Length: 141
Image (cartoon, rainbow, N blue to C red):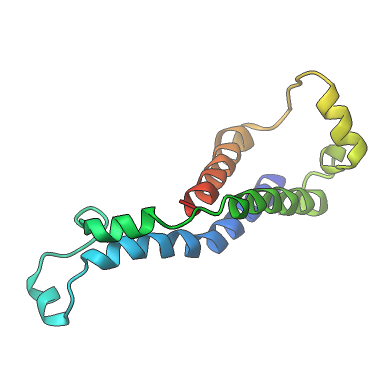
């Protein structure tokens, strides 16, 4: 497998794993606006993301749930660890992914640097990774 494809594989896996959590949150709002019976759904206008209007009670129920901020934090750290280990095992073979406490300490004390990532990583994989972080946070409300 080419390195650029190897870098994208964890993103695809993480997307599939996290879609169920985001879908569950969306189903709570969408189910409040869905028709109650099959007969009424046949005569009613189709309900979808563009046409669904949630009841205020359903919105209030979702909004009043306690927000668990630890879960997205753990998901983000776990995602980064899995991504790092995957790239270390199957990536380009460079020592970029050889992370230790010493390398973390050195990076926190040193100045900013630039990477030599190819176009495909900088234009597609990095934005996709950022959207994963956004999705983890949204799943917690």
